[in-house]
Image (cartoon, rainbow, N blue to C red; front, side):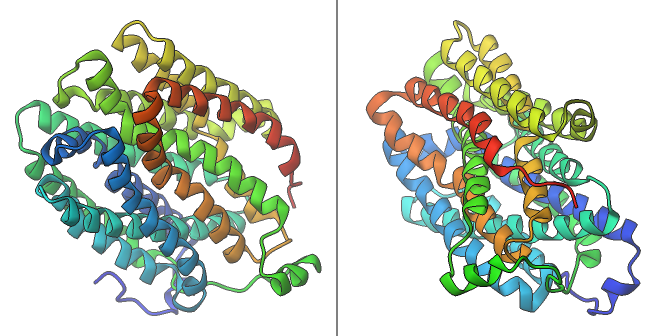
Length: 396
C-alpha cells in the first residue's frame, strides 16, 4: 500500500525528507494509540467489565506487542523500516473503528491483540529509524521525534474527546482519526528507510553476547528505566479516564481531560528537551524528570478534587517527557550490541510497560484500588533517578 518506492530511494532521498518522514511516523504512532484512550470508559461500560476483568482484557494488547517487538527486531534487518511501518499502520487503520463497535469480549480481545501487535512493531521500526537518522545528522533529535509522538497523542486524545463532547458517536470519532491517520501516512511512509545497514563498529564484548544470546546488563537497565516510564504513561492513557469517572464521578465524555493535560505537558517537555539537556546536562535531566514525574503521580493520589488531578497528570507528563528519548539515544550510542538487536530489546521492555503494564494495573487495582497502585508506580519512578547512574554512555 505505502511501500511503492525502491531501495535506491534511501540514497537519493535528502536527509531532510528522512527527518520529516520520521517525525510524521512518530506522530502517527501517538495519534493512533492515544485515540483509544477516550474510548476506554465507553468500552468498559459496553462490555460490562469491572477493573480486574477489563485489566485481563488489556493483556491482549501486551501479548500482541510482546510477540511482535522481538520479531520486528529480527525481521527489520531483512525488509527495512518501510515495510514494517506500512503494515503496522494499515492494521491500526482497520482495528481502531472496532473499539467503538464491539460488544463481544472475544472480538474485542482479538482487536486489542492486533492493536498491540501493530503498535509494538511500529514502535520498534520508527525508533530504529530515529536512531539512524539522528546518527547521520550528528545532532540530538530524539527528544523532537518523541515530542512528535506526544503531539500525535495530544491530537488523538483531544480530537476524540472534543468529538465525543459535541455528541458525535464513538464510531464516527474513531473514523475521523482514521482519515487523518491515512492522510499523514501517505505523506510520511514513502520516505522512510527501506534498508538497514549493519553496524560497522561493535565492541568485542558483543560477540560474547551473540554467543550467549542474552542482552548486556547495560541494555537491560536501560530497558527497565524505559519500562517504568512507559508504565506510568500507559497507566495515564488507559486508567486516568476511568480514575476520574470512578473516583470523582465525572461524565465519560470528559474523561479524556486527564490524559489531555498529561499529553500537553509531555509534548511541551519533549520539544524543550534539547534545550533542557544543554542547560542541565543529560545525567541531571533524568534525575529531575524522575522526581517531577513521581511528584505528579503522588499529586494524583492525594488530590482532593478532580481539577488537582489534572495538575498532577501535567507534572507526570512533564517528568516523563525526556526519560525515554534520552535512554533511546544512549542505545544508539552504545557499541556493546548491534543497534537493531539492542533497540528491539529495549523497545520490548519499554512498550511492554505501556501496553502490558495497564493490564497489571487493572488486576491489582481490583484488590487494592487504583489509588494505591498509582502510589506504587510513583515510588518506581523515583527508582529511575538511582538507576540512571548505571546507564551513562559518553557521546561518541
